[in-house]
Length: 108
Image (cartoon, rainbow, N blue to C red; front, side, top):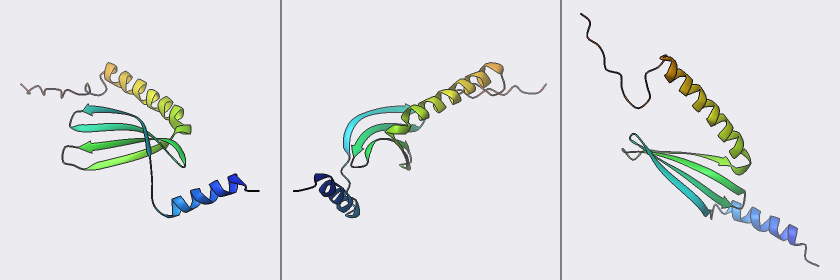
């Protein structure tokens, strides 16, 4: 009798060792922030579902991070915490408003 769990595990290991990756695209969202383009790609491969966030600057430089689906809610919560904190700084006058440089006033 064939043990399909063993066959699947061996096939997965062989697939990973070959260096071949076949990510299945599930969803993507693209946003432009100042001179950066951000792409959020939800994908799936043999290891599971993950989110790849790619930052591409107009110079062509590119950086990516990958977050497993199991960590997406934790990532969202941390991001919401940072957003809330940054809004409190902007409202308090501690830092200049994000997105528009503050004009300097000449000294009299």
